[in-house]
Image (cartoon, rainbow, N blue to C red; front, side):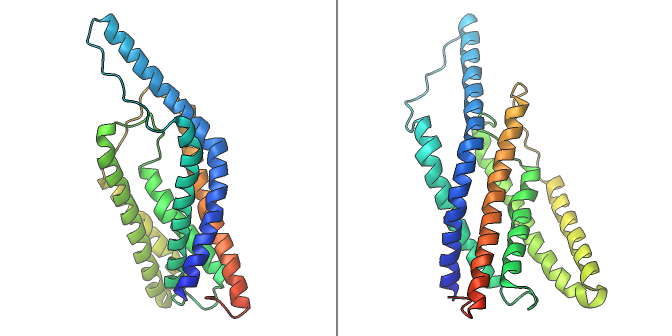
Length: 252
């Protein structure tokens, strides 16, 4: 039963990965190239200034282990495909867990779409509001560990808050009705993540001279890739599961 949903999710995730790769190749990679060009210019300007002032020249960077062409081609393709396939499998497991815990009137297609929307909000949108995606030239390499940790803490807080408020909504329905219970639960979620966002430290390492247009387009590309992934998995997984349900083989 669970195995069939896992495999279905992985297959759907593979389709989402192919679509996401095409989008990132066309829209995302040019922004990465511009960010790398900016970083190179900054290094060259710094080296020229140090040479003019008679300072010791910094050590040259080591040999490039993976060329930019490989990173933007095969590397991007493999990374996106592996990520999306694994993510689709996790979505299938989440669907198996959620199935039967929501109202029976909710069709498999509607449940899949609901999981995709709530997942996109809790796992990507809200954490991204606190710690938005940055291109390669942005950020101090020495702080990458703490920045990654803070981002995952925000994801964990958002996800736990979403799960808890869904449970709260189910508890409030008999007292306040479905609509009012949903509004109260949504308000509680917003309050919880707002408190977490306020308490977690701010990370702002964008250089003053970094092109704002490149930064904006990179973040749009990041959000677009996530939208494609979540929408494809939610809609396609729901359609396949709905079809299987109509045949009386929901978990086959």
